[in-house]
Structures are given as structure tokens and as C-alpha cells.
Image (cartoon, rainbow, N blue to C red):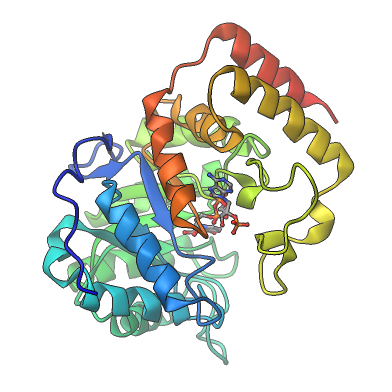
Length: 331
Ligand code: NDP
């Protein structure tokens, strides 16, 4: 069936400036790490992308290796772009990354110029576009000079294959170093994509300060800890959940009784706020003005709808924050 995007798609979504750049990103963005591979059904993938776009989600995040198999999420997105969103490229921010294992031999991994530029060319072909909006170094490479990796991002921008450069999984000092080099090259670092959620608060310890000082945006990934910070696992592991899938990155043994107890306590606070745990977990991240967008994943349309409805209530009282901190600090 042909698709016409909702006319009111920009009515409710909030858009935040990404660091000190000119780019606005939606408060909630959609990532295609899981649920968009060859193992997933195309009809569900289409439904997810359509609903997201209808709700004002303009930013879709990919990487060379998303699937499984690696590369298939970019192929899926490319097909949907062609069938449903062909006329809307200028309303979309599409990102991709390179830095994790992708193809055999010494050039299919890490952060050399050879690897990054070859990978970006492959991603563009798979998605079927001339340029990505953001191209990331997916992780720092301990054996490649930072100047070379940042030089590759700068080259991608100069070649017109990417509009902006980003980094992901860089520690505070590495991010600071990358920012200086990119500034010197004339391609300022747009954005950092770190892991961050109520269950993993490492970026509060220095990274957010560096990003603010350097005028770099921040888009945390796995904000729901891959689904743990939702009502998904309150009563066991559902068969259709990520933790139950053989190819997912969330393992069954992560769902311990102790963790579920913590999630239940958090869920009680969320309930008193009139929110689901997922909504509270997203609002909790968005309360920091240094956060540009939260990068969610979803396996169903209703999850996207529920997560976007988070924006209806973002405020926290001091008492709520203190109670949440206390629960999170428990071993
Ligand atoms: P989340 O933490 O948002 O987890 C998404 C999962 O949570 C969904 O698949 C679903 O699980 C569950 N979920 C989402 N919303 C709800 C809801 N309202 N109620 C109940 N369950 C819900 O993010 P992801 O782990 O998917 O990561 C998001 C994106 O971050 C990725 O797609 C990718 O773009 C990026 N990323 C980047 C990395 C990097 O190194 N730069 C690494 C990892 C991710 P279920 O499938 O069980 O229904």
C-alpha cells in the first residue's frame, strides 16, 4: 500500500539544537541496530519507520554492521526509503558508522582511513543514497593515530559523502582530542553517541562536560538498556523479547532477580508519575539540557508511540530524583 506521511507530523515532536551546530534533531530518534535485519519481517520494519516519521522522528541511525547479517539493516532502510520516503530525503537525518568488524582482512575493522572511507562507500550503496547526514567513527582505535581517524571523517565530509562528522564510544579525553583535531581540520565534531541510561551513568563523570565545552551534541544509545528499563521483563522473559532471541545482544542471564527488583522499584515511581517505566527512563535522560536526543530502538509500533508520548511530561521533582538515585545506587 502506498504511504502518505501524516500532515501533522511536526506538531508534537520537540527539536533540539545539536551542540553549537545549525542542526536540529528530534528529542527522540530511532536506531536500527535490532529489528531491521534480514531476520526480521519487512512489513514490520516498514510500519516502524512510517510510524516514527509520522510522529516527527526525522533521525534514523544506522551502522555498517547492523543486521543480522551485517549490512542488512542498511539494505532494509534503503528499500523503505525508496518505496515510502523517496520524496522526503530533505526531511531526514540519516547516519551511519564504521569501526566494528565488517568484512574480512585487515581493512574491514577499526579506524584507519582505508577502512572508514571504504565502509562509507559500501553503506551509501546499500542505503541507495549519495550522502549520509552524519558519519561516525563507531569506536576509538587504539592502534591508529587519532589524526588519521579524524582525517577520514573530514575527508568524507569534503568528498560530500557526509554532511557532518560524529564520534561514538569515545572516552572524555579521546573526545576532547578528537574535537580539537576536527576543529583544526575545519570539520567541527557535530555529535557524540555514547551508551547512557539509568543503569549506566558513566557519561556523567566527565564526558558531558567535555561535550558542553566543545559545543558537541550528545545522543545516548540504549537509553532503555535494550528494553530492561521497560515493563518487558517484570514477570519473566517474554518469547518475543530481545533477551529471548538467539541473535540479539541482550542475554537471558542479564535479567537477574536482583535487577528485576530494582526495575520494579523504579516502575512504582513511574506509575506515580502517570508514566510507564520506559517513559520515565527516557524523560530522566532528557532532563539534562546537554542531551540533544535519545536514540531508542523498537520492535513494535506501539513502543514508538509510547516513547514519543514521553514528551508530554518531562519534569521531575527533587524528591523523585533523590528516590531514583537511591534505587540506582543499590547493589
Ligand atoms: P533501547 O535501549 O531503546 O532498547 C530498545 C528495545 O527496548 C526494543 O527493541 C524493545 O525491546 C524495548 N522497548 C522499547 N520501547 C519500549 C516500550 N515503550 N515498552 C516496552 N519495551 C520497549 O535501544 P537499543 O538497544 O535498541 O539501541 C538503540 C539504538 O542505539 C540502536 O538501534 C543503535 O542505533 C544505537 N546503538 C549504538 C551503539 C554504538 O556503539 N554507537 C551500540 C548500540 C546501540 P523488544 O525488542 O524486546 O521488544
